[in-house]
Image 1 (cartoon, rainbow, N blue to C red):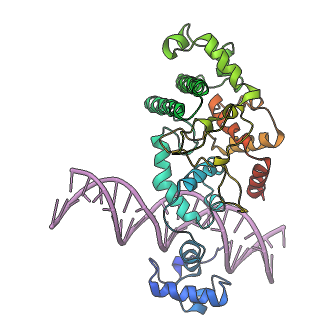
Image 2 (image 1 turned 180 degrees about the horizontal axis):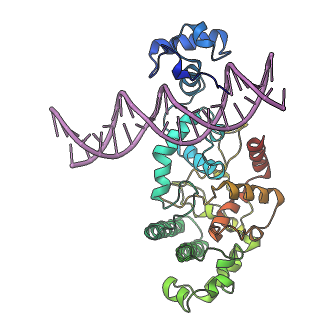
Image 3 (image 1 turned 120 degrees about the horizontal axis):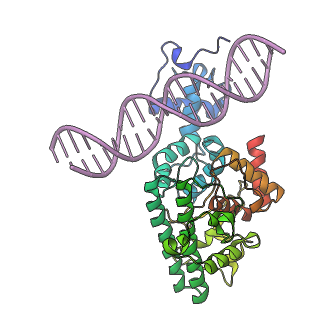
Length: 352
DNA sequence: AAAAGAACCAACCGCCTTAAG
DNA sequence: TCTTAAGGCGGTTGGTTCTTT
């Protein structure tokens, strides 16, 4: 196939930044006639540009429904969440942010969000903790910061519950550190997703005697409690570890741990919006733990399939995936709190 | 105040997919 | 079924603006 003539090969056509006059001509023409065939448009409108350039200018800048200005925290979190599931499908991501273009989101990702994830010790491609040695320290800092956040709950919440949650969060932080250490050491394939939490499971048996106690300060009973607390019937709601956002009203009772309902603050706030309800963590500042979600297409697909089939988390362990870890799977299944309709919709959109 | 470096972002390039003939 | 034009998409570039020294 000869292929069509590239825009740039056409003689005498202007390139580079658009002038206000060119913008005005393009907008006037499209308002009067619609864009029709983009290739024919510049000729009809009297613009010395190729059709592709006109289309890009219109869709990325001149379109009247474009929302300009800084991205909100909600939008940032949404982009991160969507990117974790969709990867660099900027157009698909843009489809869930009304008024934002794929180009704008792509630029925002490359200039801001990628760096933020890196600063948090996360791989911006996989959204997983980076496992290089230096990052162990940054992860630890981040995790410990997260546990401190929980301690703030004592100001506004039942003391016993808050202390328990803080203790659990600390244990989680330690476990994630342990997981990273194991990852670096090459032991990255637990036989089940909660295996690492199971003090009697195969993973722990591979540790040197006294390692948990001496290095991480964990003892068997603590581990057992943690394991029991977070096993299948009681998936952790890591979003509960978000710090109170100013006057945030905390859930009552033990709702934070039951893992069965989603905090309304995590849902997109705009009522009547026909777009997907993608989980928000609008109150999560970027110095706290992000949602741990997988970004690899294979894993994402796998997780989506699991959501569809209501597979229990510990059944989704993929022996062939040497990078799969407990916390990553927890992160994946945090999304179990999101309605099936959301995932169905997402799958439909991506597969159609 | 000037220079250098970093950050930002509009626009381009080239590949892929789709639809029409 | 094949060819071709057109649109769409993601990666990249390069000019401009901002920040630091």
